[in-house]
Image (tube, rainbow, N blue to C red; front, side, top):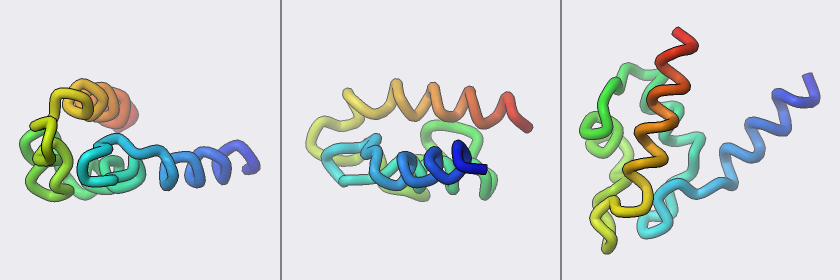
Length: 72
């Protein structure tokens, strides 16, 4: 139980998209609500649409997508 709580807290404070300050928890929520591609995650969260145009966060979004979809 303690590990799960720590994970949720970390997901809320870990920013995946620095340009838009979007946390990992928001990316995961989008995936759990049905997003299955980077484009769908971007549309729901706005991640990857900041100044760097996703150069930093798209690879991380792809990895989170892979991990979360493997769990299903």
